[in-house]
Image (cartoon, rainbow, N blue to C red):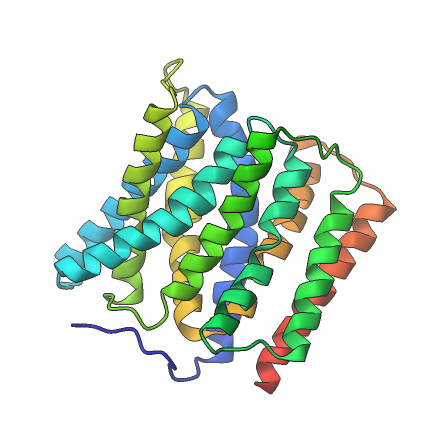
Length: 299
């Protein structure tokens, strides 16, 4: 059995920087990708998320089995992958998707930005305490995201607020729980988790009454293809690798950078505008990430 080590050897700084860049930029762009898929009339939101994970995970699984000759996960490992899919993809991703029916995007982004805080708390329960530098970086980044969204309407229904509370807790718990569990290699782990989580997301979407409303257009299919290849295979695999190789506080820093990337892409591709407050907020967020990176270097 392949067991994920609790204290892996220190990875190369260049590999960590590349993985963080992929998670930061690609996941930040998926906000726009999902919006394009929905505008094109592909599928309801939860089904889009679930379908892209199933397609991406299945393709990745096939490549790993056929071309890399990797062994299939054991029953115990499939159980652990299902738990990861439930906590991170169904609770973490799916609850945000469902909440966006009733809450503003600003509130959703602020809720997702609490992921590093929850990861630090769950890590402390497991005995891996964040340093003072990491706590400082977490606090700075969270304040920056709140500031970035301060100008938006933070209206929400009670149901939406509950979903936004569950989402970051579920994602953070799964991200910390994965360390030390019996799992295949990081790439097979990412593939298996996407398959399990995607199935759970589609079942949830059908259970809440989501159904296709129109045939997908070419733009919609291209948007889903982008989400499958880059949002799921590339970025999600990079995130799983980070969970195995860096401290949780740094792995979770994507929650601070993604809103910045989303805003910048909105300006460049959708003609949106932002002012000096947004620029200052972005600078604060990036300062928090820099503090986290320096804290990791000292560790």
